[in-house]
Length: 179
Image (tube, rainbow, N blue to C red; front, side):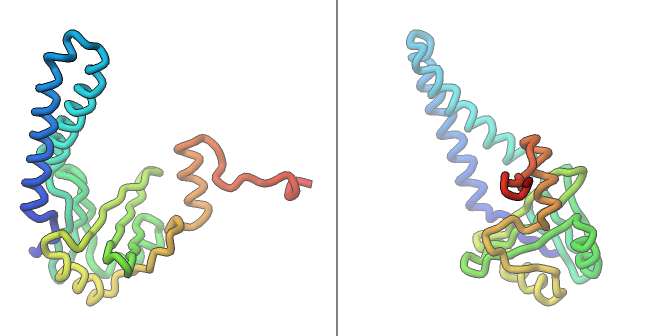
Protein backbone atom coordinates (compact mmCIF):
# COMPACT_ATOMS: atom_id res chain seq x y z
CA UNK A 1 0.00 0.00 0.00
CA UNK A 2 1.32 3.44 -0.93
CA UNK A 3 1.23 6.35 1.48
CA UNK A 4 1.18 10.13 1.60
CA UNK A 5 2.28 11.28 5.07
CA UNK A 6 4.31 14.01 6.73
CA UNK A 7 7.98 13.68 5.90
CA UNK A 8 10.43 12.47 8.54
CA UNK A 9 12.15 15.86 8.58
CA UNK A 10 8.86 17.54 9.58
CA UNK A 11 8.44 15.11 12.46
CA UNK A 12 12.02 15.69 13.64
CA UNK A 13 11.51 19.47 13.53
CA UNK A 14 8.26 19.10 15.49
CA UNK A 15 9.97 17.10 18.22
CA UNK A 16 12.89 19.56 18.32
CA UNK A 17 10.45 22.47 18.69
CA UNK A 18 8.62 20.65 21.50
CA UNK A 19 11.89 19.98 23.31
CA UNK A 20 12.90 23.63 22.85
CA UNK A 21 9.62 24.78 24.38
CA UNK A 22 10.14 22.35 27.25
CA UNK A 23 13.64 23.69 27.90
CA UNK A 24 12.38 27.28 27.86
CA UNK A 25 9.57 26.33 30.26
CA UNK A 26 12.02 24.67 32.65
CA UNK A 27 14.33 27.67 32.51
CA UNK A 28 11.42 29.96 33.47
CA UNK A 29 10.32 27.71 36.34
CA UNK A 30 12.85 28.95 38.98
CA UNK A 31 11.81 32.57 38.30
CA UNK A 32 8.10 31.62 38.35
CA UNK A 33 8.43 30.43 41.96
CA UNK A 34 9.12 33.99 43.10
CA UNK A 35 7.67 36.14 40.34
CA UNK A 36 4.03 35.33 39.64
CA UNK A 37 4.18 37.25 36.37
CA UNK A 38 6.45 34.49 35.03
CA UNK A 39 3.76 31.84 35.52
CA UNK A 40 2.03 32.74 32.25
CA UNK A 41 5.11 32.25 30.01
CA UNK A 42 5.93 29.04 31.88
CA UNK A 43 2.40 27.70 31.35
CA UNK A 44 2.45 28.79 27.72
CA UNK A 45 5.72 27.06 26.80
CA UNK A 46 4.95 23.97 28.91
CA UNK A 47 1.50 23.71 27.32
CA UNK A 48 2.90 23.98 23.79
CA UNK A 49 5.50 21.33 24.61
CA UNK A 50 2.98 18.88 26.05
CA UNK A 51 0.41 19.45 23.30
CA UNK A 52 2.97 19.00 20.53
CA UNK A 53 4.40 15.81 22.02
CA UNK A 54 0.88 14.45 22.58
CA UNK A 55 -0.12 15.12 18.95
CA UNK A 56 3.13 13.59 17.68
CA UNK A 57 3.25 10.42 19.74
CA UNK A 58 -0.28 9.68 20.94
CA UNK A 59 -2.34 10.72 17.92
CA UNK A 60 0.23 9.32 15.52
CA UNK A 61 0.80 9.99 11.87
CA UNK A 62 -2.07 11.46 9.93
CA UNK A 63 -2.12 10.84 6.22
CA UNK A 64 -3.40 8.86 3.29
CA UNK A 65 -2.85 5.19 2.51
CA UNK A 66 -4.05 3.83 -0.81
CA UNK A 67 -3.78 1.21 -3.53
CA UNK A 68 -5.66 0.55 -6.77
CA UNK A 69 -8.86 -0.45 -4.95
CA UNK A 70 -9.10 1.49 -1.68
CA UNK A 71 -8.07 4.71 0.01
CA UNK A 72 -7.69 5.15 3.77
CA UNK A 73 -7.84 8.61 5.33
CA UNK A 74 -6.03 8.36 8.68
CA UNK A 75 -6.98 11.26 10.94
CA UNK A 76 -5.22 9.67 13.95
CA UNK A 77 -4.21 6.22 15.17
CA UNK A 78 -7.76 5.58 16.32
CA UNK A 79 -9.75 7.27 13.57
CA UNK A 80 -9.57 6.08 10.00
CA UNK A 81 -11.98 6.44 7.11
CA UNK A 82 -11.69 3.71 4.49
CA UNK A 83 -13.42 3.84 1.10
CA UNK A 84 -13.25 2.04 -2.17
CA UNK A 85 -12.39 4.51 -4.92
CA UNK A 86 -15.75 3.99 -6.64
CA UNK A 87 -17.59 4.79 -3.35
CA UNK A 88 -16.24 8.34 -3.13
CA UNK A 89 -18.91 9.97 -5.37
CA UNK A 90 -21.77 8.35 -3.44
CA UNK A 91 -20.24 9.36 -0.09
CA UNK A 92 -20.02 12.93 -1.37
CA UNK A 93 -23.69 12.82 -2.38
CA UNK A 94 -24.63 11.55 1.08
CA UNK A 95 -22.83 14.55 2.58
CA UNK A 96 -20.31 12.50 4.53
CA UNK A 97 -17.28 13.54 2.49
CA UNK A 98 -16.16 16.58 0.57
CA UNK A 99 -12.92 17.09 -1.32
CA UNK A 100 -11.71 20.45 -2.54
CA UNK A 101 -8.40 21.76 -3.79
CA UNK A 102 -6.70 25.11 -4.17
CA UNK A 103 -4.95 25.14 -7.52
CA UNK A 104 -2.73 28.08 -6.61
CA UNK A 105 -1.20 26.41 -3.54
CA UNK A 106 -1.66 22.73 -4.34
CA UNK A 107 -3.44 22.10 -1.04
CA UNK A 108 -6.16 19.44 -1.01
CA UNK A 109 -8.75 19.52 1.80
CA UNK A 110 -10.74 16.45 2.80
CA UNK A 111 -13.76 17.08 5.03
CA UNK A 112 -15.64 14.35 6.87
CA UNK A 113 -19.01 14.79 8.55
CA UNK A 114 -19.97 12.43 11.31
CA UNK A 115 -22.54 13.01 14.04
CA UNK A 116 -22.71 16.71 13.19
CA UNK A 117 -18.97 17.28 13.54
CA UNK A 118 -16.59 18.24 10.74
CA UNK A 119 -13.18 16.63 10.65
CA UNK A 120 -10.53 17.80 8.23
CA UNK A 121 -7.45 16.22 6.72
CA UNK A 122 -5.12 18.22 4.49
CA UNK A 123 -2.68 17.09 1.81
CA UNK A 124 0.15 19.53 1.07
CA UNK A 125 3.10 19.49 -1.29
CA UNK A 126 5.48 18.99 1.66
CA UNK A 127 4.11 15.51 2.36
CA UNK A 128 6.09 12.48 1.27
CA UNK A 129 4.22 10.76 -1.57
CA UNK A 130 2.08 13.82 -2.38
CA UNK A 131 2.56 13.75 -6.17
CA UNK A 132 1.69 10.05 -6.50
CA UNK A 133 -1.38 10.45 -4.27
CA UNK A 134 -2.72 13.42 -6.26
CA UNK A 135 -2.08 11.52 -9.50
CA UNK A 136 -4.12 8.60 -8.12
CA UNK A 137 -6.96 10.96 -7.09
CA UNK A 138 -7.08 12.32 -10.63
CA UNK A 139 -6.77 8.85 -12.20
CA UNK A 140 -9.69 7.56 -10.11
CA UNK A 141 -11.78 10.69 -10.82
CA UNK A 142 -12.24 11.60 -7.17
CA UNK A 143 -15.20 14.00 -6.76
CA UNK A 144 -13.16 17.12 -6.03
CA UNK A 145 -13.91 20.73 -6.78
CA UNK A 146 -11.85 23.87 -6.63
CA UNK A 147 -12.20 25.84 -3.41
CA UNK A 148 -13.39 29.37 -3.87
CA UNK A 149 -12.76 30.65 -0.35
CA UNK A 150 -16.28 29.98 0.91
CA UNK A 151 -17.60 27.12 2.99
CA UNK A 152 -17.47 24.12 0.71
CA UNK A 153 -20.78 22.60 1.82
CA UNK A 154 -24.31 23.70 1.09
CA UNK A 155 -26.03 26.49 3.02
CA UNK A 156 -28.32 24.26 5.08
CA UNK A 157 -25.44 22.13 6.27
CA UNK A 158 -23.28 25.17 7.06
CA UNK A 159 -26.19 26.68 9.00
CA UNK A 160 -26.60 23.44 10.97
CA UNK A 161 -22.91 23.36 11.91
CA UNK A 162 -22.91 27.05 12.83
CA UNK A 163 -25.99 26.58 15.05
CA UNK A 164 -24.30 23.66 16.76
CA UNK A 165 -21.19 25.68 17.52
CA UNK A 166 -22.68 29.08 18.39
CA UNK A 167 -26.34 28.35 19.12
CA UNK A 168 -27.41 31.00 16.60
CA UNK A 169 -28.45 30.75 12.97
CA UNK A 170 -25.75 31.48 10.39
CA UNK A 171 -28.11 33.29 8.06
CA UNK A 172 -30.08 35.80 10.12
CA UNK A 173 -33.05 37.43 8.46
CA UNK A 174 -32.78 41.18 8.32
CA UNK A 175 -35.65 43.46 9.37
CA UNK A 176 -36.66 44.23 5.77
CA UNK A 177 -37.24 40.51 5.04
CA UNK A 178 -39.43 40.06 8.12
CA UNK A 179 -41.94 42.78 7.08
